[in-house]
Amino acid sequence: MDAQQVLDQIKEIPAMPNVIVKALGIIKDDTSGTKELSEIMAYDQALTSQVLKLVNSAYYGFAQEITSVGKALALLGMTQTRNIIIAVAMKPMLTSQGGRDMWKHSLRCAVACEYLADKTGVVDAGDAFTIGFLHDIGKILLNIVDTMLYQKVRTSVKNGMDIIEAENELFETNHADMGFLLAKKWKLSVLLANCIKYHHDPLSSSMPQVSTLAYVANKISHDEPDVFDEALVKEQLGLDVTTLMQYRDKIEEKTNVLFASLNAG
Image (cartoon, rainbow, N blue to C red; front, top):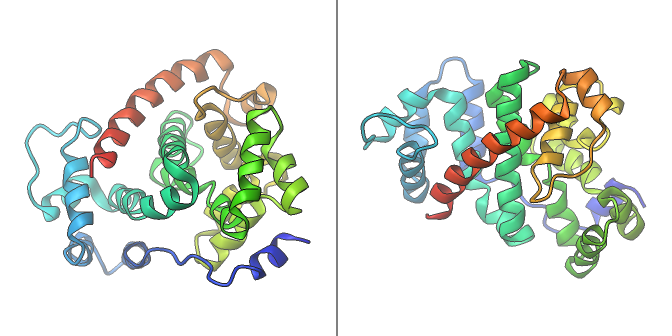
């Protein structure tokens, strides 16, 4: 059984939250701007409240309090606004299918990707945030297919088994391949879909540098950092272990601020 056959078992494949679809459409449209973004957000008071809470947090560190969505969007810009919308609007789906741990890991990996992209310049930092945040969306699908079976995957991983091996053994596919199919269904960019598919196997990607960014961001974003291929990361990103661990401390600080703000709503 391959990923497509597993996907075909799911009667109701999760749809991307409507506000994200609209936001991505506006951002892709060169004739649209922050005015159009603020208009779609005006229909979602919970989202508006979260965005204002986050923009006033220490994560962004603006000097004065921001009280209007229009002002917030003007200060943040389109890409940062998109990232906040995705992080807020995806929260219910991630927490319902993966719990608080998956939600926090996604945020941590998003911040890690953004931070490492800023340091290495291999991809736009704003795009990197989205890559990091959505890298594990395939886990949502496997959890929907068989929640109890996916719990066995989690147990195997806690006992030291590689997650891709555990998923392949129990599901005959894995979250990277499933995530790639969901990314295509959601009409995400080729860059994003590619990184989702290859974040455990970056050298198989046609975009190995960015996929390595996602790979190592994922590895250092667990509570206890996973072992990673140091030679690969050095070759593709020019980063050594010592530097990465120093970055990880900064990433953890930024993540805690972001998580505290988003988790409060």
